[in-house]
Image (cartoon, rainbow, N blue to C red):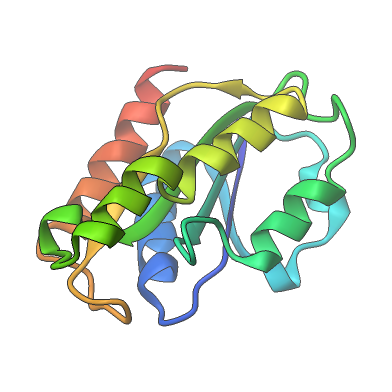
Length: 159
């Protein structure tokens, strides 16, 4: 099965997660990892699984990921399995009631990514996942790369 992992990364945290996912799929799958800025439309041809990830910026995916999702043709993901992830700060680490309320209202980047992929015809294989950073610029919290590997293995088990 051909797998494509498309991501955007600002401080390198989301890239680390994307690469951990790709490495865990390794020889089992034909997995390719691509930064969204280098993405070519033909890379979507013949996919079995598309995984998209973004840092959470103002409760949303980055503009580059949002633009990528908009450019995907309607129903072009009809036979493609999909999954989505983001990197984020845990609400437990946020010392602001207002920010915690805003997170509850608006959420994180992974769900809107998954929703947009589903609207393009993709079939969600696993709920969207968030991986935690220690601060707005990172680094990743301890154990998050292992969690990303485990998450990827769970995706493959659902196939």
